[in-house]
Length: 209
Image (cartoon, helix red, strand yellow):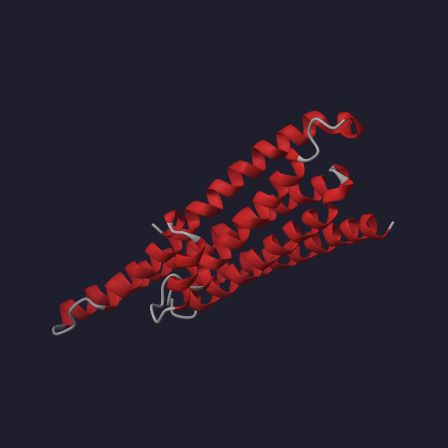
């Protein structure tokens, strides 16, 4: 599993000629980093007298951020597994018309699954950005830059995942599926940018004040 490798070994595999892991796994990893930073700001806020009024909320945000980190981390390997299924489908025999039909159907189904994984990354990124905003507003002011970086990592996760959704959609012939996913991607991208911009404005305001 990718998540069990050291950072150096993961990067070595990423830089290799193997097409997986690739951008989809990196998108999920970016989400994990963003969620972890949000959790860190919580832990640096909890227990501080200055932020006692936000103690309960910070503990709740910490719990949610850790849950999101687990989701993102699982998606690192799920993305690579989904890509592998696409490659397996392309490797199916295509000597007869029946084989060709089965191969085409398998490719389409595997590609749909490969599109759904990064879409899930995008959804989790939106949810985690909402948590990052809370810590940017109410968390330890000394960690304002960390809250900002969290937002950037989550925004990068969403944008990166969107590219992976879109490249898979380009190979799918089910127009209804493509239309539905394309609409959701566009909506999530708009929301992600708006949320990230708000968090960065808050973080930068605290840093310069």
